[in-house]
Length: 557
Image (cartoon, rainbow, N blue to C red):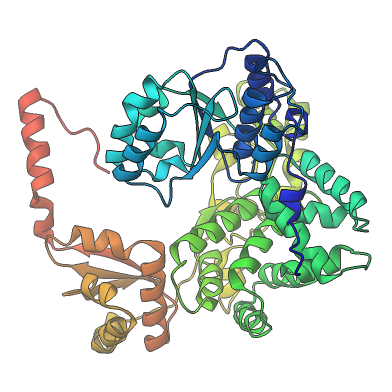
């Protein structure tokens, strides 16, 4: 006879209210209701997956139907027939319904017929409807009246991960409790306890990595924990083994990628993306791990600016979302490199802290109003001297300081704070030591519009090959002008929607890559319209509104 192993999360599922981790305020409220016998007729539990919603629902069922208690109790025995059957999921008085597979009106009608039957062993019949947001609109409507006034022997417990999909009419008929993601301390303590009981030797770093991968879900953390220990049964498990088992990118690889970014080597970055892909590293996993690595590095690496950290992490998750259906996942890495090195107006690499910023502004105002205060001026200079040496975007003059000038931005590289032309162009600008940083200018490659006009038919063919949607959006377009490294693409009158779609990150990046590949250039694109586009219906409507209210246009954006 084959013996089936029980998964760890089922084996160590909480059997008492006190064992539920991370939901103290919910369990306390439910226990008080059981102790005072003041249960609601319907509960709605909402929160992320694997945080205890169904587990708490089962404990309520035990508290209501425990045979070793004269009435409902907040401390079910766990050994009577009812408690054991509820734990095993075979109780006739606890009906669990998966709304994902029983979502129609017919199933709800069947439920309405059955709720009139009295409980077989217990005091009440408990109906637990999991993933209740999956019910159809008609099914919700059919459930409303029953949910509002169920029979006295019936208790409803609804559970969902997407509360926004539940109709307000349903929410208002239930007592709602919001479950939170479980914090690191609670999950690592749970896993430590299981490791001791199962005689598993695993280090603290591994448990923290498992927590990070579980995203605050106890069930997921148990599943990941089991995945790790199954790979190294009987061995001592350290962080390197855990990373291997979970496919996590080692820190040495992430650090190499970061160093390549900071050294501004585009070619090596693209080759690096190809290499890790060929080595079997999943690009989506690599990008997520790199985002987390950046966040952790910021705590110890003074070279990294806030702008760089936030912009990179934002770009990573935007790209992951926009390109989730892309078949060649290497493109995600390519687009990230492209986005990081686009010309942007941002602050430099070394950033002044918030408190220092306020102090700098206040001191600058003092100096402007009273030129005798030399001491404050020296304080400001000392505070920002490091920023000036590292090409940040503001500096103080020797005469008077305008506070608004302190935080002017400059065309700088998102990664190093250097001027873009200094980092990527073949030449480095010669700056005078006393020249204001805000006056530096960038040099752009000089391209002729003739080049793009000659290649436009070839570009359009390549766009057509890349996808029908992109081809349709680019219909009837042509290159109009190129200036400062930006190619203006003209759209016909009435194609404003097409233009907006093209300027979305994924589509714009694809078109830029196609153009640059065919024309051997390094340009960005923007969109313009024919002159008569200004006479569209939106402008006519605005004109009518202005005339009606006898108003005037103050500013156009």
